[in-house]
Image 1: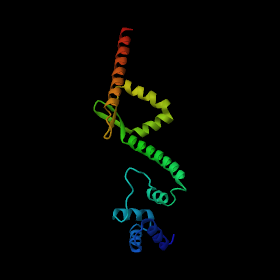
Image 2 (image 1 turned 60 degrees about the vertical axis):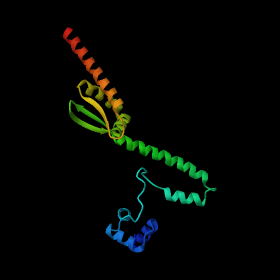
Image 3 (image 1 turned 90 degrees about the vertical axis):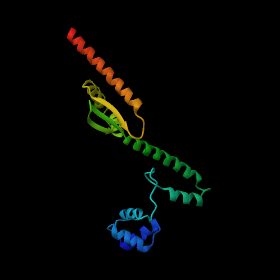
Image 4 (image 1 turned 180 degrees about the vertical axis):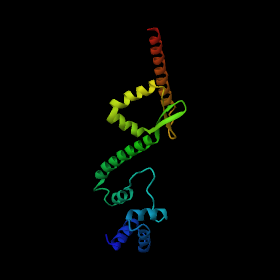
Length: 179
């Protein structure tokens, strides 16, 4: 794309002056996305809100005001979809911040985000469930770790399962000695 067209496109998207758009593009190697990030860093363009992964806020708010009566139903259904998408993104983000720790005594072998566990359970449950049972019989403990939520209840349940597996192992050992 021609440099003048890039400058015009950046000016159109950001409402900055011609000179600011040109400087931003020059500093970013004429990459429009990098130029947008450059302008955000300099405080010339407002950053999108943190908890939203994509933003169409300004476009929809302007159109709603202009064509509120004619297109109200279309935006309501679009906002419902947008709300569902944001809820899914928030759920994925939350699961990415919850970890399953696989450890023995005080040594942590593996720390996996809950999102990965869910995906593995979906595609390879036939392998994950027996592997988990084998890990429990090898005295390897599972813990849930998160800075954002309280995982005490889940850890109590995992500890209870681990203790019951240890009791079962002891019963097998006693039966083997007696038998």
